Amino acid sequence: MILRAARETFITGDKVVVTNHYITREDHPCFGTREAQVVFSNTGGLTLEPGGRTSWPKSANLKVETGRLELWERDGRDPGVLFLEIELAS
Figure 1 (spheres, rainbow, N blue to C red):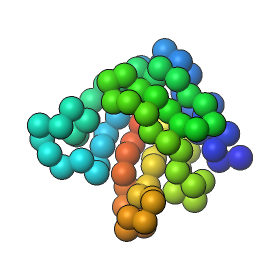
Figure 2 (cartoon, rainbow, N blue to C red; figure 1 turned 180 degrees about the vertical axis):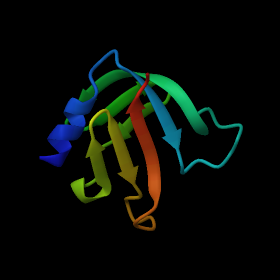
Figure 3 (cartoon, rainbow, N blue to C red; figure 1 turned 60 degrees about the horizontal axis):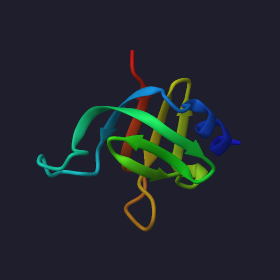
């Protein structure tokens, strides 16, 4: 149910604001907060331009609110650390 809600939060063409809490190199193109556009959203994840593809984490690591997603650390990284925030641009 949570993954379905996440997939339905954004549709192709939506403009979003992405904040990456994982990348710490200021010269990286995905560092910090940036605007992006949703290229594709399906059961496997979300594709943004610029930014590429983000796979959906386990539902326990995903927080869904209206127009906003939080993805928390996954794949053996420290649990409970915010990884990525994505929300509809105003």
